[in-house]
Amino acid sequence: MNTKIMLFAAMSVALAGCGGGVSTPEQVRGTWGTDCSTPTLQVDDSALHILYPNKQDFTLTASDFDGKNWNATFENGGKKITDGYVLEDGTLRLENVTVDGNSFSGDKTKLNKCG
Image 1 (spheres, helix red, strand yellow):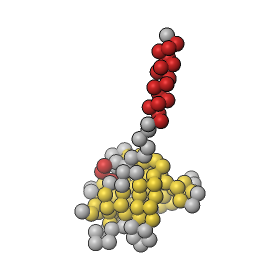
Image 2: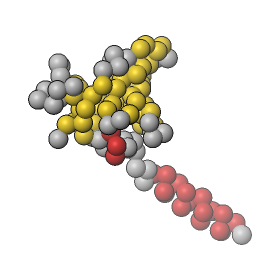
Image 3: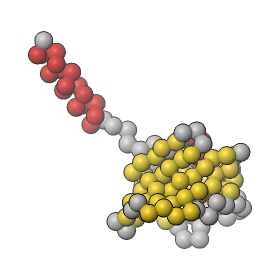
């Protein structure tokens, strides 16, 4: 019996080490903008890229999606930031931003998926 428990525990530890990391939902992956000739945001499988006006790349530390609301968490300048987006009617909009526990209203501009 102890051998089975130890084997199970060893397998659990091994599988935990193989964790897939952060993954964004398929629905939000791609390039977004109000005008697709100058897109402002790109979402990859594990990163968020600000394309305009100043290019910045952020590796996500968490990504939560309930089918409508997407929270993308990353670090910038030692601060934990969570961008709260709403996916609705084929558009993506920044609803709120939380920086180290302090929440602010997002610009709520609707972004269209480009390409």
